[in-house]
Image (cartoon, rainbow, N blue to C red; front, side, top):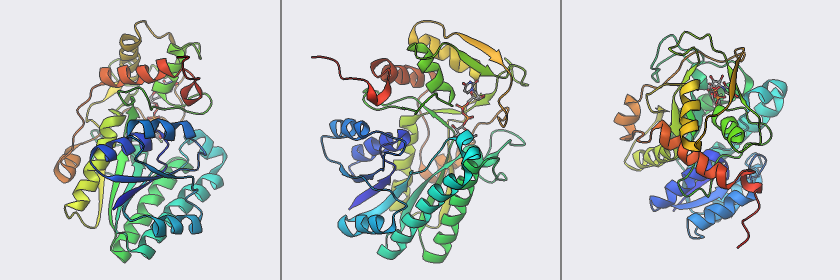
Length: 342
Ligand code: UFG
């Protein structure tokens, strides 16, 4: 039996593929490379001894998805494949709704048609918006402030309804802020264009692709005036997916929602300082206006992850930045970096 991983060449997907392999599972990876690189699949094959089955499939294509279930003995799905840029989603909402919701419906329909019951879904803490208090637990009110966020909110609802109607067993994972890379330095985050997210931006400053970081907002009501997030090592996050599959294998039924975070909040400046320690020199920055739509503070209540999945994050901020830096230092242009001459 195998686990189908949609979007398995992406940042979180690729790290999860490695963790699944380490857990002894067979993995079928699909990706259409719309926001990822074939070089990620090559790197994955090196990390897992060539054991992956890979199919270049767009999961909004019902016939292609159906064929995956016919051709492979799939007993669970981890569904990552989605567009994920917040600002782009406000400029191209229909493209985001079409792609992200179509993918979720298409994959779920194929599961129902082929009698596959287990699904782990890639959701986001973005569904909490600006929380009334921290830490946020899974019972907090949800919504969205941009089309990307709505695709996660509606994606969760699609799976809740499909679980109730068709007996699927689903874990909805709400990610906080993933950073870091596999300690091998072989796979990592490779955003297209100028990064939107903090750590990829900082790392491109560190390798000289960008001049300096702009810190969005220095007047928040926090101890250093910058906004607080719950940064989680991508390998911890990947292991959270394996824990979710383990829980489903052990008999978890229905539709569960679980936060994946560390339970610890860090300010932007604390991340910048940790990056400086990892890189070996201070990261130049200036404090500018707040970014519209940003929340002041959010971090996860991790108790449900511990009780339902028996999982908790173990890696701290310094390890995240050190691992992210190893990847960026050896891949200054991401997967497009030429291989070193032997
Ligand atoms: N930040 C900067 N400068 C930058 C980039 C980010 O100061 O160049 C700050 C942001 O203002 C924020 C913090 O760093 O305070 C983290 O920002 P990210 O963009 O890295 O992360 P977000 O928390 O804004 O975004 C994350 C996910 C999204 C999700 C969003 C909504 O990456 O997928 O949470 O909560 F939609």
